[in-house]
Length: 71
Image 1 (spheres, rainbow, N blue to C red):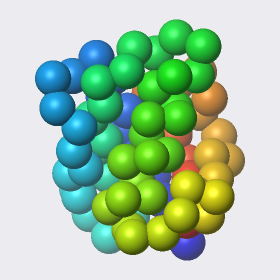
Image 2 (image 1 turned 45 degrees about the vertical axis):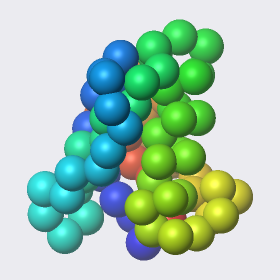
Image 3 (image 1 turned 180 degrees about the vertical axis):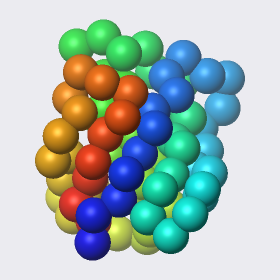
Image 4 (image 1 turned 90 degrees about the horizontal axis):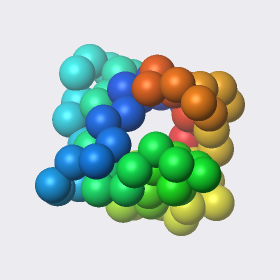
């Protein structure tokens, strides 16, 4: 399924906030440099959905706060 994510990097905690059926806000501690925040988002989403990281794939938004993932 495709989900739409708003990235919130440089936060004090890591969490997933469900906005609607397939729209989420993901807070991560990592800064948005060299893809570190993207990797952290993949890790947080994999924990939230209870699946391995390899099952979470970023489709678009590599350099944007608005991202699309395939879960």
